[in-house]
Length: 499
Ligand SMILES: [Zn+2]
Image (cartoon, rainbow, N blue to C red; front, side, top):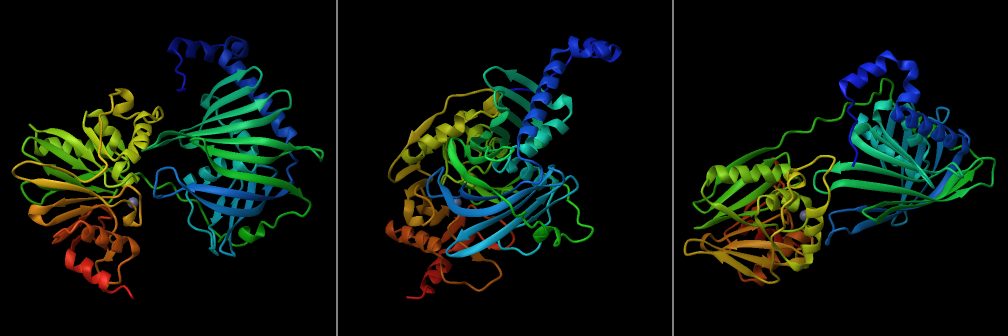
């Protein structure tokens, strides 16, 4: 991992006083100049600035899938061309879905960025973060914009240049992205671009764009087969061809309203936690802006926490709140209702605190990944102070309890119509059921027929023959969704399903 260099003060003063001697005296500056030279040469090798291209692309994206790491796959095709003397890019990307076409347009030049999303007709309000995302994502079409970004970046953002059989240039780009450009010095062509960024749950994520084939039939070269991978999983596969007709950027440019400006990125809201006592044994913590309700069960000798949304930071807040309420009690178990980030994203904080993670066997690999992924860019407590994972598995109903309170952990899996690892928690004494996100009942609209997920929950309750009065849901705790639901309402919504 690389960090910004810090030069001793005396050396900085010396450098200021003897600027002329700098290139030879400072190996960092010398390698920066070499890297710049190679990048300039690489840009010159690429297709001329008025190149226009057509492509087909297979796009894969992670989604809230039944199992971890599954992707949703789409066929796309489109065209792109360089604009603003090669400093910008116009992309017309069309999604093909169920015999329908959903066009989208993006336009980036030195002054602005505009984005018309799939199927939309007007440019959405974009932020400077959206522009940066597009710039670094544009490497799936051409490495040129990232190469130029490096040339524009201050020398202080340059980290190092490693040259051998291949040449690697490392620099820190906008949004604290750490970028590695690998160039083959023999051909002056880019072989890969890695963009590493920090994700709250997954840690240091690397998007690797690989240029597998270059077309050299014309005077200049361009990548004709490009693949992008994240965690080794294929995210994009593009086949690119040059075309003679220029693409029509007025499709978006003409629709940019006068006075259109990029907005600053939305400030990241600081997480807030509040606690509610349901009864002596059951507490709920509400975390915003994650909109997630966490369950704390106060057993005679220890505590159990279920759900920890999105980040280790949230996990730490939950632990602090639990200690505040019960300073003398050990937090023994952590449980998650399914593997999605709103319930498992904070697991690293609990592992760091020595809490035993309860999991079904199907999720243990994923938990091990979350616990071992590096978090160098934004270190959390587990990164700074690694601790062994305590993991206990179960593959059928289990009960946790004492003579005061009993909790049943009931797998319903794919019956949830949501994930394969779905759990419900049931407290027989209180006729209380806790689940994550299967109910979608609106606070201010009349009750509607149950969705397939809602029906799945109902079927699960019936399968176990539970006597339920109240269902408490973890997410989304917001102003419009009902998350404390009388069982009678769930039953009524099932009755409304047309036979
Ligand atoms: Zn979910």
